[in-house]
Each structure stands twice: as structure tokens, then as C-alpha cells.
Amino acid sequence: MEPPKIWRERREKYLALGILCQECKKKSFPITQYCPHCSSKNITELKLAQTGKILHFTRVSQTAEELMFYAPYIISLVELDDGIKVTGQITDIKLEELSEGTKVRMVFRVLSKNGEEGLIGYGFKFVPI
Amino acid sequence: MSKLGIVSYGTYIPKYRISIEEIAKVWDDDPNEIISQLQVSSKSVLGPDEDVATMSVEAARNTISRWKGNPQDIGAIYVGSESHPYAVKPSATIVAAAIDAEKELTAADLEFACKAGTAGMQMCFGLVKSEMIKFGLAIGSDDSQAKPRDPLEYTAGAGSAAFLIGKERVVAELEGTYSITTDTPDFWRREGAVFPSHGNRFTGQPAYFQHIVDASKGLMEKLGTKPSDYNHVTFHQPNTKFPLTVAKMLGFTTDQIDISLICKNIGNAYSASSMLGLAHILNNSNPGDRIFMTSYGSGAGSDAFSFLITDDIEALKSYPLTVEHYINNKEEINYGKYSRFKGILR
Image (cartoon, rainbow over all chains, first blue to last red):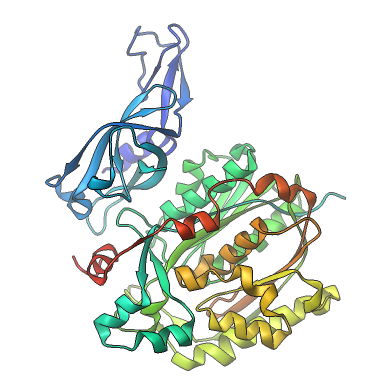
């Protein structure tokens, strides 16, 4: 990952921030300049719920080169307790130990490393509660 | 005058463990002899997507959640470690961003072998006492390195502990702190070297024991206290035998040190070691208890602290992600997976 991307996305990825539209009052993720529901620009940052449940999940074995160190890993669609759905990795767990509906909480983890000398990308993943 | 002390605390220990038996099996060592010498049964191991920055963030977040205060009020963050993910680029800035403490604060990474975290605590105490900042966050965090087959491989673990220092709702009032520093080359890692080296038995008497004894006696002399005045004590835990021995040398009983001894389950968490012991003690302490802590960092130095527990401790004890929680939340791995996680197998 390039420095500007890490810097620009750090609040979204580190703090798990979405947006709350002040016009239609709908929440969404990720952070966008306009509300994806009503196109209003009148939006504020929203801290997402830190816990939720797994809706769907699968195991990723073949992936981008910078992620192969972590493969196989589990990717999941998580419904947070505030109703927002986000995609994220489930870590510290084996595939056979997971099921739909498993309660999870956010943790801070390494997302990718740009080789031996490049930047480290950090952000949220989930672990079962 | 308002009290100065610890306002909140938070810890993190990774889930993975490797047992002494599993390591001994690889090198044809006698596990019973090693367990009896070190009094350690397993050590914690970082997952492949963890490092000192992620552990520091988890410990910091647990500190903030337990405190329920505003991270924007934190004026300093110090991360003490000898295994920062970057040689140049601070872990402390990652922590600041990940707890939403940006951007009116000072921050730095510290290195003093296993006592860089307590050095950060002293810096925060100074800044808060002088009213340059309102709250300071000191973190000790390490993913300890050990050369395969080195005796250190049996104990080099991982963990993180954070303490929020301030003057409001203090749960452990600082009675005093005192340090000893000498140039003692007992353990080192040269720039660019992957694994540390050490002076074998030299790491004991002139290093660990001498510095902890001098710092502990020095603080008690300064405060006019004696070992029997304290309910609990924690020292740096490179293994379980060393802190038990130094406790006895100083006149503390096994009962006083017992709660702090987490090394038997997770090994040596280096910069987090004595601080994890302190956090575990705080969660098991009562108002009026007196707590003593002395860290040790190779190279070498010791920081001693004396704390008095206040009534406000009760409000923080129910926070669920405790040292005990993390010790019990574990998964045993074999040496093959350990090698992969540690990056020995690539």
C-alpha cells in the first residue's frame, strides 16, 4: 500500500468509521463524500458498533501476493449491532469452528505488508466473542 | 492537592501458546528439567497478523474502555518495546490514531530492553505532575525474539500492558518512584541483527538481581517503608524462578508475589512483563492495598514504584478483558506452526 492511501484511510480502517447522513438519517460504510442513500453532502462521521454477528463466511486460499503469508484466511460479511453490514477477516479461529450467527468483536490487526521493506497496513478484523 | 497515579489500565496477550514440552521435543532436551528450572509451562506466541503495534492498540483500547474517558484528553503516548515493527516510524503514532487521540499530543517509542514501558510510566508521571499534560498513556509491549535452540527460546513470549496516568479518578496513587541505571552488558541486539545475544549466567547476579535489589531497597528507604507494608509485589519475570528469588532476597513472601506470577503461563513478555503483573494485581486488589513494582531492563536498569490503591479501583474491576481472560483464552500450537508464525519458516 502506498503512503497516501494508508494515511487517507486510517480513520476508516483504524477506528472503523462510517457516515451518518444528517438528511435521511441513514448510516453507511465506508466513508464517502456523499450519502449513498440520498446523495446529500450533509454527513458526519459515525463510529461503527464494535460487535456483531457473522452472516456469511468463506475461506480464501489463493490471494494477492502480499496476503499469501496470511492465507488461508477467513473472510466474512458481518452484521454489526448497529445494523451496518461490513466485510472483514475473521482471525484467531479455524473455519470448522465458525458458523453463521457467531458473535464477533472488532480487533486491530495487520491487514497487509508491502514486502520486507514497505509499509504495514493496519485495520480492523474480527474475532469470535 | 489532587492525587497523582494510575487512572486506568489495559492489557493484551495473544491467543497462541507453545508448551515447553513441544520446544524441548525439537531439541531433544529434557522438558521436566527445563520446567523445574524456569517454572514456566508455556509461552504466548503472536498470531501471523499481529505485532507490537497491534498489541499496543488492543491494550490501549482496553485501557480507554475501562476508563470511559475521552482519548482526546491524552497528552502523551509512549510505547516501550525492543520489537517495534518499524526501525524508523513510531508505533506510538499508530496507537494514537487507533484510539482517536490524534493530534494534540506528544508521542514517542522507547527502548530499554524489558523496562522501556516503566520508563514511559515515569515520563508520564513527570508530565502530569508538572501539569504539562492532563493524561499520559504508557505502554509496554513486546514480541520477544529468540534464536532457535537458545535457552531464551523457552520463555521469549509476547504481550502488552498499558497504564493511563493522571490526577482524576486515580485508582493507584503513586507514593514514589526510584531508578537504578548502570552500563551492564548482559543482553543486547546489534542494529540489523535478527536475534539478541546474552551473557548467559551473567544476566543473573550482577544484572537482574543487583539492579532490582538496589532499586527496590532504594525506594523503600526513600519512603520509609518495608516489605511487610505491601499487600502485593511484582518484578520483571524472565522466568518464574527469578522473581521468586529476588522477592525472597528482599524479604517479600511468596503470598505477596503470587498473584503477579503470570510468566508460568505466558513466558517472558519483556517490556510488558512487570506491567502485566501490575495490571493483574490491580484487578485483584482492594482499596487501601499497597503495591510494589520493580522492573528490570537489560543494559541495565530498574525502575521501582510504590502505589496505594484507592476506592475508585472497584469501578474498574468488572471490565471483562482482564489478564485472566487473556491467559485462559488460548490455543496450543506445535513447533511447525510456531516457526511459521515467528517468520522462521518463510
